[in-house]
Image (cartoon, rainbow, N blue to C red; front, side, top):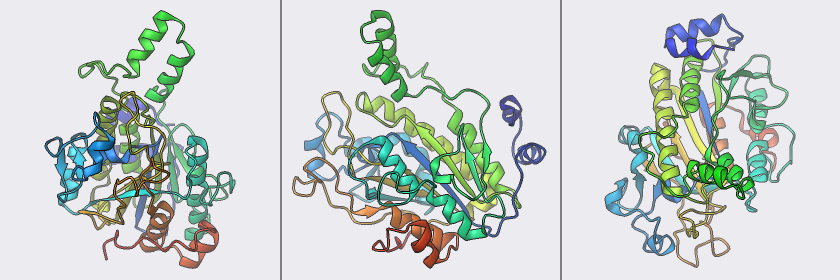
Length: 385
C-alpha cells in the first residue's frame, strides 16, 4: 500500500516510480486505449446536473429546486450545466465531454442495493451473476493472463470481481463519512438532542452556510490522481474503476450536490492532467445506479427515481453534444407519473465503449459480457472515428 503522505509529495514520474517498487504490479497491456468508470453511488439527480431549463414542465415539477437560465452554463439552448460543474466547460468546448440524459440500466424498482448490483453484474436482474461485467470483458480482451484493470478504493467492487485478476490501490486513510451515512446516523440518534442537532447540521438538512469549513473529502481527488499516474504508465493497466458516494439527496439537495459536483469536477480534471498524452486514447464514463424523481419532495430534495444521466469525458470521446433521445417532462412522458422515462440504456453505452473503444469482440460482448442485452444495439456516435 502506498503511504498517503508519500503520495502527496510525489507527482508524475515520481509516483509511477514509487508504484513500480510497491505492491502494484504493472501489466503487459494488449491495447493503448484507456477506459475509466466512475461510479456515483446513491442515485445522482441528473436534472440537477444537466438542467433542462427550457422545458416548460421543469419549473412546474421543481418550484424551489429549479435552476433558471441565469443559474446554469448553457450548452445548446435547452440544456445547461450546473455552475459547480463549470470547471468541465473547457472539456465541452474542446469536444471532450458529452452527456446522455434519461439513461439508466434496465432496473426499475428503485432499491440502491439491487440497482447497484444489476449495474455491476451486467445481467437484466439483481444478483443475476456473481461476477462483474467489466471483469468478464477483461477476460475477453486478454484472456485474464495479465492484470489489465485497476480498482481504486477500500474494496474491489462487484463490477471488477471475477476470474480475471485485478490490481488494487487504496488510500491509506479511513474513508470520509459521506452525507448518506451521516443522515442515517441522525435517524438513529433522533431522540438524543445533542447528537441529533450535531448530525442534522452535518448532513446539510438545514442547509447551513458552511462555505468556509466544509469537509475537504479529498479521497476521490487522491484516487483520481493515483489512477492517472498508474494508467499512464506504458506497461500499466488500461482499465480503472473509481467510486464517489453521497448522491442520495432526499434533503438539502442544492447544498449537498454543489459540494459533490465540485469534487467530481476536480477528480475528472485530475484525470485529464495526470494522464497527459494518453488522454487522447481515454474514455471516462460517469454513471449512477438510477436517477431521481422528476418532482421535488418536501425537504428540498428528490427521491429514488429511474432515468438518470451518463457523462463521458476523454480525448477519445466525440463530445460537445447531448446525445441520445430525450422524452421531456410532460405528465404523459413521465415513467409511472413520477420519474424521467429511461429511453437510453447504460448497457448500450457500455457495449459501444467495449467494442468501439477497447476492441472487444462483438460476439463475445453479446454472449458473455451482457448475455441478456441482445436487443440493445451499441450506442453509436459517442466515439471519435
